[in-house]
Length: 126
Image (cartoon, rainbow, N blue to C red; front, side):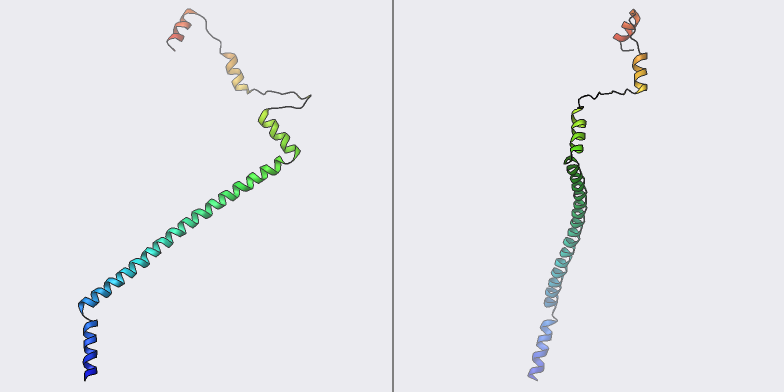
């Protein structure tokens, strides 16, 4: 009988409202901690995706730069870069300047008016 009374006392304590509130509070703390871990994991996945995209961009940029360096390591590449950067020519070569026909006709057709009324209009920007 004593054993039965001890079991009843233990059940009475375990199912008391105070113990149930404490257990609910502990469960709430565990659930909240698990939710925070889930949010951090989702955030880290976002950062990982951004880092991988940035790595892809940097890899493409590195490949482009490596091609430029490889081109500059050849004599033809050096010559082309010097010609484009400094507008240099080899001895015996001549530079040809190509003028757009639309801009050439516009500059040729505009002649300044030197009359009195033209000067007055120029003064008032008309």
